[in-house]
Image 1 (cartoon, rainbow, N blue to C red):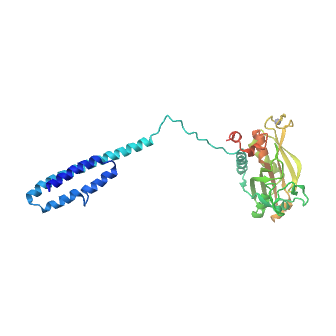
Image 2: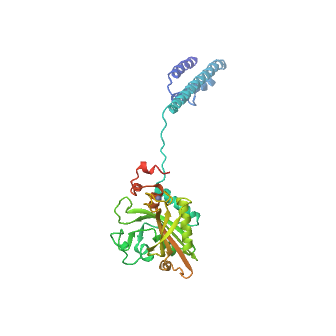
Image 3: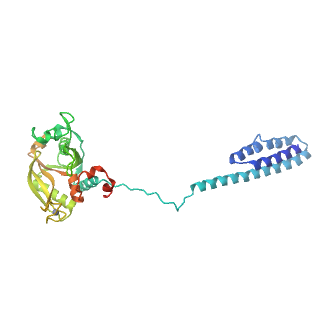
Length: 340
Ligand SMILES: [Zn+2]
């Protein structure tokens, strides 16, 4: 029995020296010291021996178990340490390496302009609404009091999907949608895309943006319109900006006007931006035509309103001195990255 034990101890020493991995060490521990392990078997059979033998063998066996246990534990600690060190080396950060350049995007200039405009109108109490880009002929023309023979209805001007459906040519149909859905008082602005059959050049694009405005309430007059538009111009182009209204014609407003702002580049003296006149036309507006209010069953004896439409591209081009509308859609990052 003692010989068997000594042989086992010798063998265990050899096997421990040959261990390569933590898993191998664990396997060896089970093989020797586990419930059915080789050393465990020997220790178990000690009870069959005589008391003297038992004492001698028991001491050697216990010592052997301690040695094997300590030896295995040391190897396992060693393996764990090595694994940890390998991990740390893998994770090491070389602080001398050049950093990765993170490029930060920027808002598109048209988005910046729309955000700025809606912020100004929100501050005056307008809410922001949106309508679909695919519109009915009724909402885009009929309900807005457009003459059945108005040239803008022509297929050379408007993209038709079928006889009843078009790509909207203006954001004004949102006025119709609003008065059909809400009761006065109404104060809403609606930015969005519009489409017209234009050949692209420096100032025309078949797709462009407008921001529409509509206010309907008791006692709204041209003076309210002028006040709101003047305040908008001062906030958009600078506090020294002056405004003037010129009579104009739109089917859905009566009276109608175009509004000019004093040139924010030269202050009204005359320059290239204002083409020497000192004034720049920026928007169309007017008192809402009673025929439009009637579409929404609004009592035209009691309620009046004003509406306006502002070209977003035109405003951005003037304010940021962009001289070709096509630059907005080419998405050349040398252009779009200039505006934050
Ligand atoms: Zn000027």
